[in-house]
Image 1 (cartoon, rainbow, N blue to C red):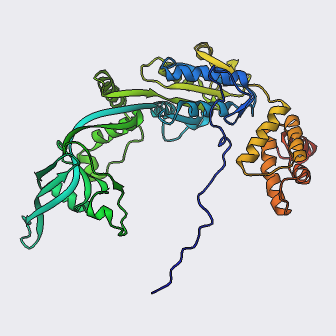
Image 2: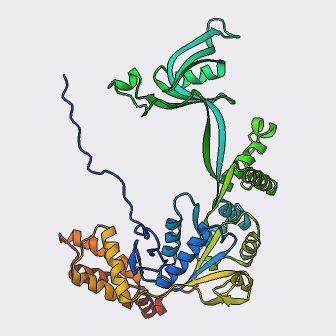
Image 3: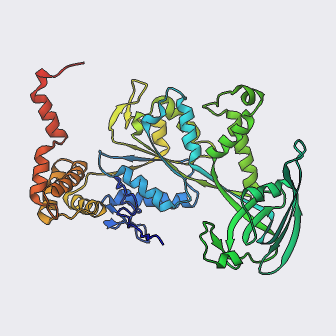
Length: 457
């Protein structure tokens, strides 16, 4: 017998530490008061408490069609607060993050990009009651007949299946389509299946634990599940979670399938017609009115939103007045600047009519204590051991330059410590990396020094 042994894997899973991996929530208590350090959030207490009120209104469905603006200097946690809002809302609430520059495409209109992003943020939870035959296959008999065009070939004609649950056993007969599905899915005795009584769709749920096959220890990739309870023929509720964008695409595909696309390979349209979206909205409203569906308004977060132009702002203002619209969060680090596409100056580069219908949350620069705590959290997230004097040096660099620069130096210092065979990041590592790299101020001074030798455009 050949000797076989398993080789242990050195890498269990792929990990990537992003800029906001450590964010777990807004870090608020039961009274929506910010705790200085909680859920990966540090400082910015007023902004987090304001965001907490926004989250509560979103959960109660009272903020639909409103705009939230996060305004503050670069590196003050605007994106972190938006990510924390999405964490607080839970996994069922759609959250789409994009940059203001993403709307400019050579293939699609700006309004098309925005409306698609908006509709991706609106979730539709569809509930449907259907009659199904469900049970463990206790017996199966597939009958075949000669192929109509080839008498030497056999094709399935019908099937007789005996299904049993913990309560009863029932035998049913089905036609060729169901027999074909059973053959294709490799369903045999012991499998738990589900047959839609209306459409005839067959679903293989897995292998029954109580069956003879389920009790054996043969190598089998099938999932093992308990034998179903109740009657064989039952009404079950199926829940589908889609977005309006998914429904738009499904509806558009059904309408586009025609003679031309079938035989001449008509190209798929990059944009969806307004009529398709109107039909989807009408269908969703009918589902909601009849109790078959529930709408979950999500969050559309647009970072660097000062890059939007006047047409995009006008479209957003119009979209906010419609019935099906998510919560829109805009983030910017601009002061009084020109609205893109015009010569008009305005606060944050936004039109005044959009500012009037928005709630504005301000973020402020971090103090030294907050910078130190954020660096400690980032060190734990990146699995970096850092000495106290090195952490203090990085804190001083962050207070003098910026938090982002200090976070960058933390990762670089950890890499330098590995190269120098240090067990932890030392003050020597931080000072060496700080001497090798420049922050924004040092880079500007460096370029100003060689200004006469640089090219002008």
